[in-house]
Image (cartoon, rainbow, N blue to C red):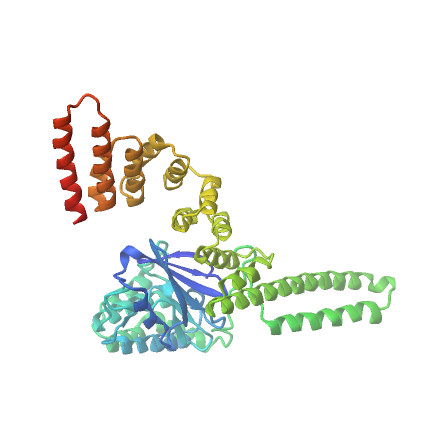
Length: 465
C-alpha cells in the first residue's frame, strides 16, 4: 500500500521502510509534544511508534514498518476461515475500551499477516488525537465497517466501491443491523455468502493466502528479502555453469542455449534490482538509527551518500533537512519538496543572520510568505505593505507591515497593527515616531508641540508601566 492515502483525520504514507501518519494540527487538541510520548508504549496490536514531529500545521508520527504485514486490502480474496481469524483478532481491540487510547478500523489503518494476526497504524489518545472516544458502540460500528469490507469489499470510508448485487446488499444490511458483537458473528455465519464460500472452499484446496496478487511493476515497489536475493544468485550461478560448461554447442541446443541466456539475463537484472533495493534499505535504516540516537547531521550525511532516489529516502531526508538549523540543509529541503517553502522561510527567519537572509533572497517563488520577506530584506517598504494586503491573517506579515509603516513615517498605521498584534514594542515605536515627527514639524507652535508631546509621552509610560 504505497503512496498517499486520505483519511478522515489525516493521511498515511507507507514507504516500505517506515509508515508516516500525518494529522492536521487543527484536528488535534495537542498542547505539549510530551503528550505524544504515550504513543511509544508498546502494544502488539499496533506498529511501534518511533518518533514524531510537530511543525506548525501538521503533526507527523513515524512508525517502524513490519514487512510481514500487508494492508487488509490484499486479503479480500483469502479463505473465509482466514477472514474469521482476522475478525476475531480485531475484536481484541475491545481491550482499548476504558483506556486513554482510541483507534479506527478504516481499511487503510489495518494491516494483516499470513496467520491472520492484525496490526494497526494509528493509535489515538482520548481528547488529544482523533478519534477522541472509543467505546463499545463505536467498536461495534467499526467492526461492521471492516467486516463489510473484508467479506464483500465495500466500505463507506472509501471513495470507490464495487457494484453490489442482491446477495452482497443483503449481507451488508444484515451486518449493519447487528446489535452486538455476538449477533454480528452469528450473522456472518448465517449469511448465504459465507455458507456458499465455505462450500466452495471445501472443494478447492488451493484457496486462501496462497492466492497472492502479483507485484505491479512501475506502480508498486517489489519487496525482495535477503533470502530471495541469495536464491536468485544461486540460480544465476547454476544457469551460468550449465550454459558454459554442460550444454554442448551444437545446432540442436542453440535454441535451448538462447532460451537459457534470456533467462540468465532476466535473473541478472532481478539480482541487480535486489542488490540496489538492499543497499537502499540498509542506508535508510542506518540513517534512521543515527537520527533516533540524536545524530542528525550524521543521518543526513548517510542519506546524501545514497544516490538511489526512492520516495521513502527523499521524504525521510526532507524531514531531516527541516529539523536542521543549517541554512544549506533547509534550502535542500525546498529542492526536494516545494511544499516545505513556508516552513523553511520561517526557520530561516528565526536564524536571523546574514547567511539566512542571503538564502531567503535566493529562493524563487510567487508565494507571498516568501516575497514579503525578500521585500523587507531589500528595504522595499512600499512593496512590503502591498504584499501584506494578500496575507493579512499572518502575524509575521502584520509585523513587517507595521515596521514598514514606521520606516515610511506612518506611525498611526503602525500603532494600529501593533494593537492588533498585542505588540507593545511596535506601539511604543509608533508613539516615539509621532513625537519625532511633531518635533520636526515647523508649522506647529511650541505650546501645541509641547501639549501633544506630553500626551504621547503619557501613553508611552502607560505601555511601559
